[in-house]
Length: 346
Image 1 (spheres, one colour):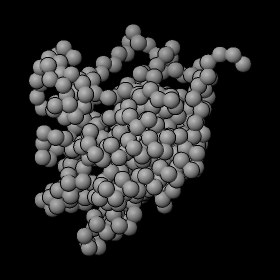
Image 2 (tube, one colour):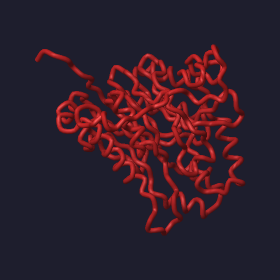
Image 3 (cartoon, one colour):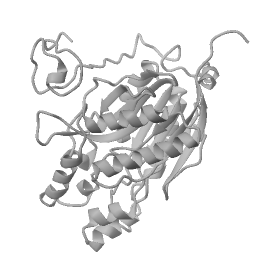
């Protein structure tokens, strides 16, 4: 039948653990899982939140005065963008011919301490097509990560459609989600940590991360009529051992915390894949972008099923930099390649 065609591809969410707080070894694990995903036919491969070099679970478990050692280890193994470790990620994507999404803890070049919860989206040619910093660290995460900005809060155009990324709690922010949808998002990538210690063992009100992920993901897919590829990091025994430092109460708390989950959903919020939660594995599903079209007939929140004369959203995509130096490229400040503008003019 004549007319336009739309991307059809296989996505994989990697439900795996990093080599905790070891950047180089974790990059090796990224390559291993990408190889497996490609062998399974995947064109898009997604890893969880701060996969390189690991999620700061200690923020939830220790008093700030007891966290300095962890903070230093994380900073020492955090990733500069650009930098040699990003180059390796780009080479992994290029060598295996996949679009690669990886959560990282990013450190800047102008502060010996500032870090961000970031996500890199790399196309199959090895080029970075989106570099996002989480807008607001959630709860205890504020002890590690700084606020991000909306500089790249935009879907990336790829050969597999327009891919948008939100990190963990950002998926509960309706304005951030709408901002991506309103810029043409077709496939949503959502990343999550290995666990979310919220209450002590025995509480009937513990935070069920797996269920929270399912609810958020189904809501976004259904509301936006988009596909969602959701990657949660797995919690392995080595991570528990490193974080607990021999403290049996900390170990018990981690082991009692509901685990994360990985899954892939369609534009009705329906599951297209199995749900990975308790052990390391890949989940895969075939994505046909064209299937979103008919569902938009009923509810198109970025088209005719809205009232833009009543509701308006403004997004300020100017980067948050510590200094504004007129006429100097951003690469001189933090490695991102925009040109500085006078405040209020960008």
